[in-house]
Image 1 (cartoon, one colour):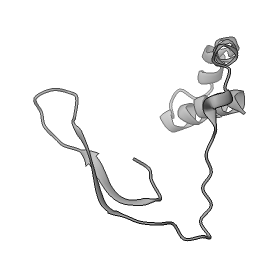
Image 2 (cartoon, rainbow, N blue to C red):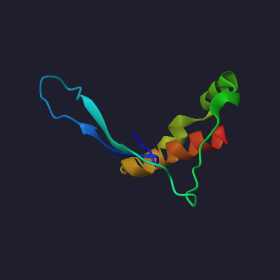
Image 3 (cartoon, helix red, strand yellow):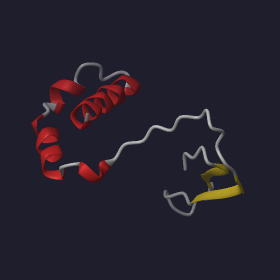
Image 4 (cartoon, rainbow, N blue to C red):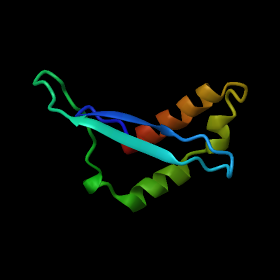
Length: 88
C-alpha cells in the first residue's frame, strides 16, 4: 500500500511452503495530511477500455523492447513510458 494518509507497515512473510508469499499490511495510526501536501491521482472512470487495448496492441513491442536487453531497468522504463504515453 502506498498511502500518504496513514502510517503503515507492509511487506511479505518469508515462508518456503510455496513460491507465493503472503503479504501483510498494518495500519498503525490514522492521520491527517498537512495542507501543503499535494496528492496527484488519475481518474480512470473516463478511460475507454477498448481504445486503450487497441493502442496497446498497435505498439511494436518487439522493436521497443529489443533496444537494450541487457538492462532490465531500462526495459521496464521503456515499457512504462510506452504505457504512460498511451494513457496520457
